[in-house]
Amino acid sequence: MPIIFDDVLSFKIPWPSHSGSETTASMWAASATAKKPVRLIRALRLRDIAISLLKEFGVWEPIQLGNGRSLKVLQFQMGNISMILSTPFQKLPNKNGDESMKYVAALNGIKRTDLLPYGLDVFSPKKVMNITWDTNGACELIAFRPGPWEAELEVLAQARAN
Image (cartoon, rainbow, N blue to C red; front, side, top):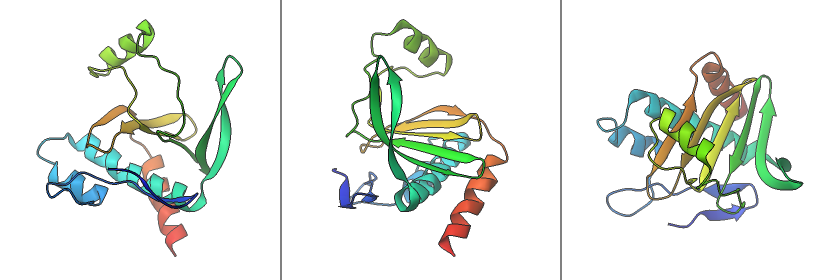
């Protein structure tokens, strides 16, 4: 399923469903409750909130990758919350063979070390969530630190909705 771009900052990320049509992430997460841990369900809900803020208020800005390379990603910052969204359209470094990447993956219970095409990092002020996913339903919660940032993110989204 391709990503559908309405314009530069407005896009829909398709979610898998049994019928093959697009569904919302929250519907997909609710149907997967029996299979996915509660922690992942929480992270998916927060990811959806973050994406809605990024779609409306995000700015494409470069970040430094090292070795003189930079990469444009969609960023949003307000209050203590900042977020970075990467998509398949950015060429992230391939760390498939990197031994340190394999070690971190093993510590987090991740069987694969290749990067899924979509990634979201949330900071408050340190990194509190790192989640990656693809359009086929694969999702990996790399890091998740519960805390007051969750409520702050929800308040930001509600304030922006009004």
